[in-house]
Each structure stands twice: as structure tokens, then as C-alpha cells.
Amino acid sequence: MSIGVSLSFAGALVLVSGSFARAQYQPEVLNPDGASESFITAAGGGVQVGFAAGSATGGNSHGFIWNGTPQSAIDVNPQGIYEPTGVPFSGSFLYGAGGGQQVGLVIAGVQNVATVWSGTAASAAFLATPLMLNSVAYGTDGVSQVGSARVNDPSNGVVTHAYAWQGTPESAVDIHPDFALESFANRVRGNVAVGTTATFDEFYNAVVWTSVFPPVAVSLHPSTFLESVATDLNDSIVVGYGYPDGLPNHALVWSLAGGDPTDVHPAGYFSSFIYATNADSQVGIASTPRDADGNNHEHAFAWTPSGTVDLHEALVAQFPQFTDSNATGIDAAGNVYGHALDTNGIQFAVAWTIGGNACNPDVNQDGVADQGDVDYLINVIAGGENPTGIDADFNQDGVADQGDIDALINVVAGGSCP
Image 1 (cartoon, rainbow, N blue to C red):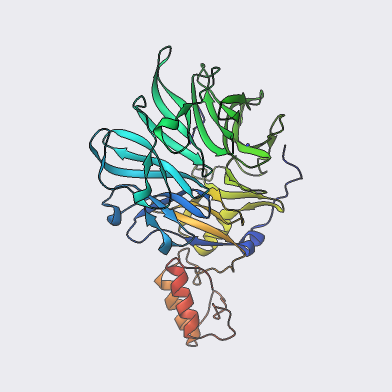
Image 2 (tube, helix red, strand yellow):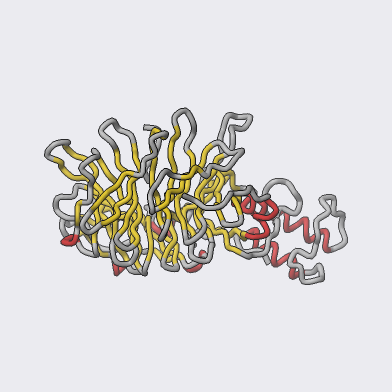
């Protein structure tokens, strides 16, 4: 298979310049204190969710909830043992949020257990039934949860089936469509859910459950594509991506009213994926054409009513150490969340906030924001040479002084632009 499992669009999309993107989106690193690596996987219900690992977690991946800042990050890995097996919890991952709930999985020995939280580690409620070998919840709207579980199928052996819950193991409903070998439910909104099926010839096809309770599944797969995945939905559209015959993956948008999807792949990029949507904008990635070394680079990307925006441009203008980025969530206000890969191969949770000021901390223009930039600004403010021609009034308060140095130090450390 060439595609992994982890949605008609009105109006023309116009590529927006990088300068516009930098003026509209202010990036910030949201890595929690004590974490050496972190990921945001989704946003919803006023929070962001994902996972992080480092000294604060004993080196294991723990589920985290953010509220827009690194200081707000909460470790929600449950303590104690998983009572059905008596095995201690060793880690957790969060993949979805909505309506005051967060969902994902906890690890208990060799078993993954679908779990729903309500903002704290103590609130963790486990959704697995005794028949589930492994399970995970990917989406919630605050009432229902959806995901998948590995189960024994009398006809096909151990396979993955999409499941839906309403807060307890007893509420579990197998929503697997009869026309597929395997299935995965990614997001739910009211009584509608979206996800993916694996066909008997081992291709992924996007699917919508027009009813979850009781389950009614309808294929969204376009006939001209080899594979497709539905990742999220709002009241009128389904978003995701697909693999056209002979081409890389393309971002797709379906209408819940029916019909073929609209291919919204941005011109000039190698491939594209949509992972999340709010009421009017979508986010995901668009990868660049291969560079001189033969590598594609993933860029966090947004499809908005005003056009498309390469969010990676705003990110590297302030944090040039990042080579790749991924947008995985968007809130109701249009703020975007995800993660970015640095030159050391480490991933960090990041946010792109709408309407923030823009700045470039690489004032000495050596390709990295570090102590050298602080020293450069100090020298310029003290009357030294300024070969890069930067504006020494970094905080834009009308005077070049200690306040500008303090502001630059804050930005280099991962804070917001002044």
C-alpha cells in the first residue's frame, strides 16, 4: 500500500505569498518543560492534544493537553495499573479532542487501550472490551468517541474494525462496513463519522458513516484514485487526501451532500494532505519538489477562504532550525497547531497564531537563531557595525535599547514575537 491511515469546495484557491503568511501567522514552539520531543496531533474544544517524551516523563511518551502555550501543557498519563490485566501503565498518546473530551490510547504492557479523558490524568476512562486485542480512539465530539480495535473475525482472522463508543466499554458498537476487510474511524461530529476502509485487495478507501448509531457506511472513494483517506469533517464537508493513479497524494475535499471530491492540491508542490478542518479553513501539509539531494520537505499548509498559505515560511522566518513541519489541528478562531522537525531530527510541538506580529530572530543571518544573534544585536545597539542592515529596534517601541535585547532573547528561547 502506498498510503497511510493515521474530506465540493466552493471558490477558487489562490496561492498567497510568503510575506502575507508571515504577517498573518505568528509561530511559537509549545514544547513542554522537561520534554525533549513533542507532537500536537489535534485541536478541539479549546485545547490541543498530542504527546511528549523526555526527562519529565521518564523517557516514555505521555499524552499531553495544551491550552495554547508551553506553560499550559498537562501530562495526562494515568497512574497505577490497568485493572483488567493488572499491568502498569507505561505510556499514552492523544489523537483527538472536542466538546471537553480528549481521546487516544494508553499502553498497558503489550496492549494498547482506547481511552477518553476530560482534561486530567485522573479522568482517564478506558473503552476497550474483553474482545479487543488492541484499541485506540481517534476522535470525539464530547458525547461520542470513534476509533478502531483489533479483533478476531471468524472469516478473516485478526483484523482492524472501526468502533464507536459513548464513554464506556459497554457502549461499544462495531461500525465496520460489510463491504471492507478492515476499517478505521478518525473523527465524529454528532451522528456522522469519517474514516477509511481497507479493501480486500488491500487498498485504502475513504468512507463516511452517515449514521453512527446505528452504523450506516457509504464509500467516498473517487473512481479515478487508487486510494483515499477521510481525516476530518465539519457541518458541510469531509476532508482528507487521495492517491491518483500515477501521481503523488493530493489534498481532497468532499461535500457531505454527495458527489466526487474536489482536488485542492496546490500548484508547485509535490504532494499534499489535509488533516483537519474548522468551519471554513483546512490544514495539513504540502511537500516540496525534490531538492538537489533528492529529498522532499514537508511544509505545514493552510487552505483558507482568502487562499492557500505555506505556514512553514512563517515558521522558518522566526525559527530557521526547522526543516519540515506538519499542521494537524485548527481551532475555531483559525489558529493552527502541529509539529516541526529540526536539523537534529527532533520534533517539537508548534502553533501558528492568527494575527500575531512577525519577526526574524536570525539578525546576523547565519541561518540559526542563537546567542550569536543576541551578541550581534548588543553590538549594533552599542554603536557597532551592522553588515546585515537589521533594524535594531527589535521590539518596535521606537528606541533601540535593552528592551530590544530582552525581546530577542525571549524569541530565541521560543517565545512570541514582540
